[in-house]
Structure formats: C-alpha cells, structure tokens
Image (cartoon, rainbow, N blue to C red):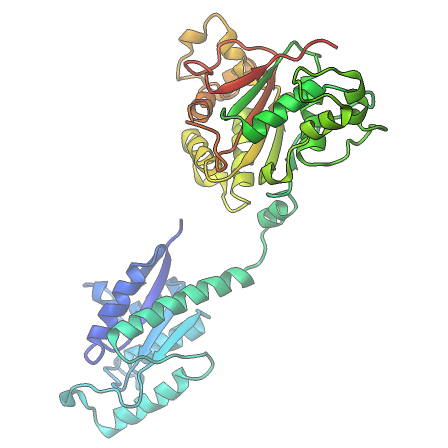
Length: 423
C-alpha cells in the first residue's frame, strides 16, 4: 500500500501543542505520513526553498492559521507559512485549512507589532476563501477535525478519480452474487435424467458437513454435463439452454430412486432443487480443460471474484500468499466453486516419481508435465479439506475429475465422493 504524504504548515511558537496533536493524529492513520519542519534537520538548503519543495512532493496540504504572522524569509514580506500556502496553490495541491477563532488566546509576549498583525489578518482572510475551511477549540478538537477531513478527502478523491483500463475491465466481469462462468460448458441437447446424482449433490450442498464433493468417473461419463445441469437448473433456477424439455421432469419419470419418500416424479423434481434459502452468495465455474487454465490462473480469478473485485492478485507476489489470501476470503462467505477437469492438476501426483518432486521445478517444467501448480495446489486443498465442517460462512467446492489417485493431502476424509454410473 502506497503511503500518502501530508504537509503540515503552521507557525510553531503559538501552535506547538496543536501541531503535536495533529501530527499524532495523522501518523495514526493507516497509509499516511506527516511531513513537518520538526523532522527536517540540518540541510544544505535555503529554508524557504526547501519547505516549498517539500510541499510539492506531498499529496495533501494541511494548514493551521493562527494570529501570529511569524518569521519571513530574507527579502520577502510573506511569512514561511504563507509561502508554503502559496506553494500548495501553485502546485495545485488539495488543501485542508483550519483557521483559529477570533478569540484564540496565546501568550502576551508573542503579540506582534501592528504591521505583522495586519499582514496576518490579510493572510487569514485569503486562507479562508476558495476552500471550505474549519475552525477548532482545543488541540484534541483540532486533531479530530483534521483526521475527519483527511478521511472525507480520501473518499471524495476516490469518487472523482478517473477509471483506469483495469477498472473498466473489472467492471465488465461478473462479481457476486452474479455467477461467474469462466469456462461455460456446452451442454448437449439430448441431456436428460441423472436425478439420483442431482439429489445427492443438492443434499450435500444444503446439509452436508464436508467442504468438498468429488465427482469421479472415467472420461466421457458425463461428469461435467451432470454438474453443469445441476448448477444451472437446481442451484440457480435457470433454464438449460439448448434443451427443449425440462431434463428433470423427463428424467424423473424414467428413473427410480433409492429414498423411500421420493415416490413420485414431482417429489423427485422438488428434491433436486436447492431451496432458495440455501443458495450460495456466489458461484465460480472453472474448467482446467481449457487453454491456459492453470491453477495459478484459477487462484487469481477466484481472488478477484471472492473479494468482489476489490483485491488485485498482483499485490501479492508470492503464490503461497495468494493461496492463503484466497482461503481466508472463502472462509468469510459461502461461495460455490466448481472445478471441472480437476485431474489435470493432479496428474503429476499420479506419476511414479511423485514422491521425489522437488521444490525447484520451474514454470516450464510444470506446464510440460501437465501440472502447472503442483507445488501450491496442496496449500489450497489441505486447509479446505481439513475444515471442521462446511458451515454457512465457508465456501464449498465440487471437483469433477476422472481419477482418484494420489490426492495431495494425507487423506480426503472431509470430501464427499460419488462415482456416476454408465447410462
């Protein structure tokens, strides 16, 4: 996170306690640093030039204007404080001005002659125009007002900031509660049935305690089609594009169910559908069969989606940190993740040399062996499967893959499994 610099300008002899309170308030704000003369130290600079240069480097100018004119640079009728104020105007810096009240008291020995007092009155008048200014009654009151003003300025700046190309791209991508089908599945028009499996998936999502469900079968058995139809029709209540009839309605008439209470087609249809109250707050569908759909790319997309677009994966350079951040986000909400073709990421673990995979594998070798993220996938699966339960605030996951070999954790005890039968 970048640190914003706030230049604090005021006289010191009459406002020392006020400056100290404001400095502490600014330094306590996350992402802000107070630039002030107390820290300048000895410099091979002329004081006026140095202060004006510091103003130009800062993001925000905070001015406290009392009744003391203060000292002036050589050959100048303006005080150092007034010169800093003019530098902020010249550099087009945002300015937050705080003007001491007319009855503001300070020691009698600081009262200046008529000419400096006249100049200070003129400066106070100029500092009070052009911007909405505030006043104060005590050091503590001033500190609170400065902190609130900085907070308001930050919000106003965010509203008026130009939208970058990246922001425009994110605005066009789905965020919760809108489902995010990164790689939509092309469902065939002849899909029908699979009622038993749909009931099982619905019961797991609505009532199951395992955080993950693995749908395991040979290639071509229809795992992806089954999960896509269940997700679209039963979880989200959407029509199945490309299907002329309701696959549940038609399939329920032909299929038998094992549960004794499901004796009619209508009851079977109702059992397949997820209750409205049980729907997740978001859905992410990802297929590892697609080009460049490596696990690292999945983590980046899931981070963006789970954070509602507020998190930039590039801010965390380490893959481990990204995986950990994703897991933390998934623990705070109930998002449904569907990982199609998950065996593509487990392939390296099924090889004979799986136990000898070292940590020095580079990206090219990972891609060549078909397991682009074999080092970081366990970091995601292990905490996911070892959750005590799939509570309402924890995101469940459905993994569709063709093999159940060498799962990258000690044992998938917290993962429900199913093997669809050939139809």
